[in-house]
Length: 520
Image 1 (cartoon, rainbow, N blue to C red):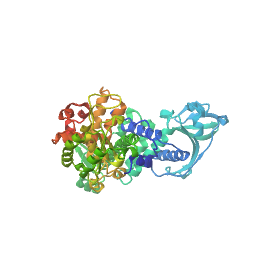
Image 2 (tube, rainbow, N blue to C red):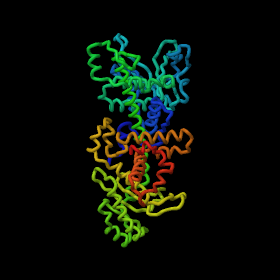
Image 3 (cartoon, one colour):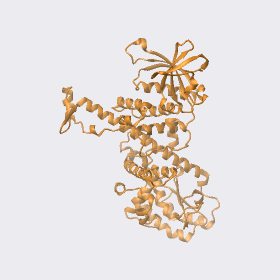
Image 4 (tube, one colour):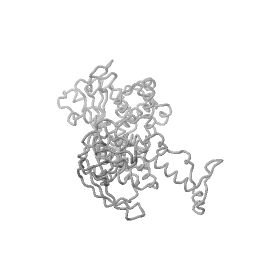
């Protein structure tokens, strides 16, 4: 099974998972983009070649990805303050600095100085095409809103020596990785020009404030349908005006361009939301893998004869790929439970890829869980014990009640690719993970509503650590809990899931609103 960590490494060069990506209801498209870029930088190991590629990306961002940048030559160099007379701000000629070091907090910049030459054919005057400048990337990332800021370097004779651009290393690399992947994902869309413009603006720190938020917001004024008849009329009449409402008309071409711009906003918003969910899902998989080494999820060798006999003769082997019982499982109680498990599995949906899970009854106190699903080998583990209260090493509750939740994880990770392909996934990376139902468009609205419900409650005072916010908003966790609620709503009520009142009154299930439950 392909792992999400492999995809994230392929897309962005991420090689680890550190501090999570924290998105809140107050975030705008601009701030989510910036946070995602910082997350990418924070979780990668970057080389000089990455920096050079990112510098080229920065030049293309400033060109609005118009294709005018060519013949780019980037060489690492040094810059000594001894030969500098002054540095002036190109945006404020009255503001100057005595030396390069005055622009940075530490001397870390000295290892990230580049001499860049390139051709910029955007000007109508070919004499202005050839460009050169010095670019310095700050590894301390303390440049702030002066990211991409321009200066002029003068020598001791007060002659212009070079143009200078500075930037935060995390933004240069993070923005380049994001823009490259977004443009690859959206390369065949009709609104590529609007996507280019939006990316150029969203990587420009001058657009960071609330006054510029409109640049990254969907404008519902342009949501009216453009009919084939309107297009036919516009083709015959360049000045054709479209009726927006009872009292206003607007030029068709302008209206059409604004719709394409809305589509660009929606596309990048969807992309960032999906990427955020991928980071949550990746952390989930990394955490599970850290807890469950492969050898520990092979059948134990010290199982006693009575337990082995019960395993071999169990009718559950018809419904599960394999079965394991802990030596401490009460065989008589297990035999009474077998029919209930079989009837329940037949009642529930089956995996669409014909896979069957491995069922293991184990002691899971070390995992701080009453149940566990291990994606890499489709193991569904439940603790056969029950506890009255929580302690530092084992959870409260009845272990067997976690069966439906873990079975939900199993279904989530075992979808049939060909079936899901019928649903018209358009994002290339999503097609790579059609075996994960919670990452698909059909589940997106339930996932989105549940995540926002949690985030809004936290914003309004609910006490919840960032760890649990991320955990409860992870796509596969939302799916498994939604599957519990669904199973209860359709009438399943036995020892394999919690009492119906738990789904009505417990905090973690209250995040599913009545509207969400209807959709599930």
